Length: 325
Image 1 (cartoon, one colour):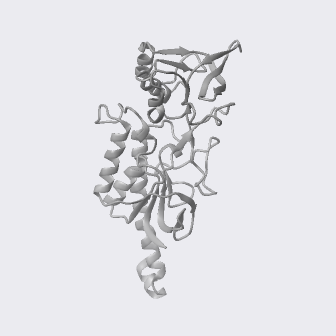
Image 2: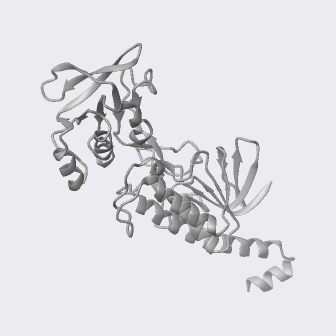
């Protein structure tokens, strides 16, 4: 069983930033990520709102985070965490390969997963025309017709990306106005390949032997239904927190996001939550990175205090009393 000052679960912008600041604070740190470093960011086609970098791809930005963390000698393991168990002296993190780690402090940055529509055909045809990542799967729809579902930044960004490849993009939104930033709205409305279907929802996905062949749409005002032929459906209606590893006893809001204080610390001392897993106003790369910084600095103080307390407790009674005074 290996013991660390800090164990970071998740290698997105928040986790990697936490690793940078933890190493700068001379904490013995390990970062565990089951997938590729960078998380959801690595799958973004374009990032234009990270301070100091006017435009870049999500993959390139994630590589910058990774290389910066590695430059400090951060220990990284690619494996799946199966449980996080709080303790009085140490918190325990168990990996799928059987490894058991102990840490004075733990930072959880597992992010979120794409929210599902929960309609007929969505699960059945995933990978056969249903996708949650345009950068991953857009290539397969070159010169074809696709439907994009959503009205936020991600949906509009991905629709613009798909417009570079597909011959036609239908952007389906349940309301009569987007939630996306104005610059993205302007770009979408100015793209001739994109047709916006306002006040509409996808109620079912149809397919044939080749894969997705169409969707069923319903007007949210008139309830009128109609069929729309398409070769693919890309769904971007938000994310749900990956909170399965969050220990019982840690407070969460009604949507499952973890509630923390201004240090990103949870209701269990020494366990911190960052990024899209944490309850907050906005979900942005720069905010996730800021969370990682905050959590690492707070963890450094916590670990230092914890170690000092344990050292006093381990001293003989007469020395402990002298030290405490």
